[in-house]
Amino acid sequence: MKKWLLFALKLVLTAACLWWALRGENFRDSILARPSELGWQWLVPGIALAGVTVFLTALRLWLLLAAAGVRVSLWRATELTLIGNLFNLAAVGGLGGDAARIILLIRDHPERKMAVTMTVMFDHLVGFVAMALVFFMLTAGRFDALASQSVETKAIMRFAWVFFIGGMLFVTTLFVLSYPSVHARIHGRAKEGRFAFLRRFPEIYDMYRKDWPRALTSLLVAIVMLPIFYATTWCGARAAGSEVGLEPVLVAMPVSDMLGALPLSIAGLGVREASLKVLMEDLTGMAPDIAVAAGLIGFFCSLVWALVGGLLFLNPRDRVKVSEIKELNAGSHV
Image 1 (cartoon, rainbow, N blue to C red):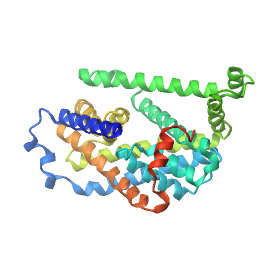
Image 2: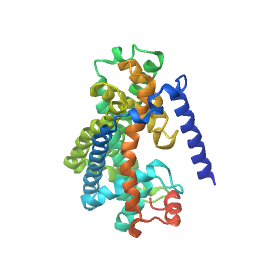
Image 3: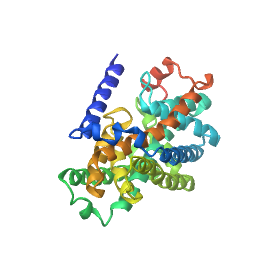
Image 4: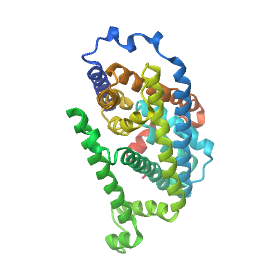
């Protein structure tokens, strides 16, 4: 019951954010009210770019699983990525994208439960580091110009810098603590205890230090993937009639993507569009309704591949039982 209440709350917040993004606009004059005027031909490259994003995300996961000693085919990693994207849209029965991937991987490799769980978590860290690096590369040396816009843009850009710098410090600290000599000094020789399993976390993460070529390659894949993913929103802007270049969209999207990743709405809907409305208007003078349409069309391009994940999920092999969800949520797999 609590999970459905949480979903209902996210639904309300999603609607509220979309309302905020569109408030003050005459909807009848908006491009959103005139779908026949949209440049639908831009959906083809948008959907294609979203598909490339799925493949590169799967490649990243495949590399990290290999570094952790979990052998899967690249096609299986792609299947898991598509199914995970489906569940990221809305937690079905309390099951999110990460939980779905973990459960299905553990079914294939029941002897590697810890490695599977930690790899999926580490995959997020790689994605975060890539997002931070892309953001820094696009905004370094231009912060004053970017933050000299409206009060909202200045606040958003400062929050993004603090958020990404803080996150990078956290990831660095995690790797320092995972280094064998530091790890041994913290825990000593004690192997028993109620929370002894926690000592295995640094050992799992240290596998990526040992197999650094795969870990570094996965990071490079993520860095290449992000601009391709952000370009789906640029296709959305072009479909909505904007002549905006790709660069301003690439500058705005890491911030918008970061805000959309916060657990405030369903799949970041509303939050992402609201931030795009502010950023794109300040950076390019883009009309608010065009910016909102760009975000929604970009989301639709990714939604197409999530629906493909839904078709794959119909395979009896990949159906998840309620008991498995409860077991994972209880932490028994860890």
